[in-house]
Each structure stands twice: as structure tokens, then as C-alpha cells.
Amino acid sequence: MELHTNTRGSLTLHPSFHRREWLRGGGFSLMMLVLGTFLAGYGAYLARDLLEVSRIWKEGRESPVEAQYGGRVTTHNFVLKDYALDVTFIVEETGEPQQFKAKFHRFFTGPDDGEAMTVRHMPHDPVQAVTSWQHDGLRHGWVWTFIVWLIAGGALVGAVATLATLPSSRAPSIAWYARGS
Image (cartoon, rainbow, N blue to C red; front, side):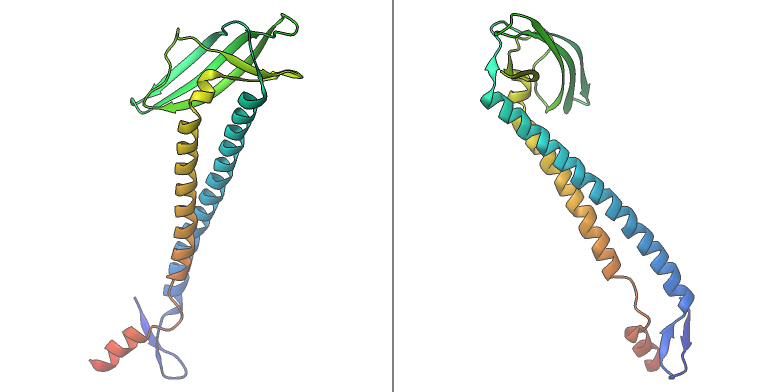
């Protein structure tokens, strides 16, 4: 840290010190703002998807027969199960099979391959469908959404706090110590 006396005779930090600190702090803040904004948007996307699952489950009709499914279930360190399933069910009104893709996740627990699955779909648009596994995992989805929003909030607060702590052009505490010696 370099100190110098300005034209008014007061002790200040050298301007290059301020530029370095502002570049570092500003770069960090910009990165945190981008991260926080991205995560807030991702959380909103997750919330919209969860609300859509709730709406279809509430307003939809249940398929008369058990759904058939295939795909993959990936477990991450015994904590998170990701489901990417191709689901086929029978539409009651037409008797025709209908297919859709179901992607969702669960924490710690969740159905395993071979367990029964039912489907509810919108009567006017059978492509809008959800599985019983998706509906049962709504709580897991809301927990994940809350965690994402919490991290987003932390990133945004961290960005603002970093900008607030960047040095000003004067440092009275350093000047006070320099005069006292």
C-alpha cells in the first residue's frame, strides 16, 4: 500500500491502489451479480415447473391403466436422484397410447425402477401430463428451489457488500496513524 500527500496536504492512498482494488472488487461483484441473476432465474423456472405439475395433477384425469416407462434414474452420492423417463399411458377418451418425457429429481429417497406409476393428463391436451412420481416429489422440488434462491440471494448480497467495502479515495485511519508516528 502506497501513501502520498495530495495538493491539499492530506494523506491519501496512491491512485493505483484504488484502481487495483476496484478492478478486483468490481470483477468479483460483476461475477456474483451474474451468478445471482442466473440462479434467481433458474429458481423461477423451477417454481413455474412445480406449479405446472400441481395444476395438471389437480385438474387432470387419471389414466385408466398403469403407465409404462423406461429411461434412466441417476443417483448422485446417495443424495440426489435424477429421473429422465419416457412414459407411455392410455388416454381414456380415445383409448390411444400417448407418450411424454418426465424429468424431475428427489432427495435421498424416491421410487426405484419397476415400481408402479400412474399418470394424470389434461382432458383437452393429453400431452400435458404428469406422473405420480413427479407429484409425490413436489416437496423435494420446492426444497431444491428454496436452496437455489438462497444461493442466489447470497450471491447478490455478496456482490453489493463487496462494492460497499471498496476503498474510498481517502483513508483517515491510515492518516491518523501516520501523523501519530
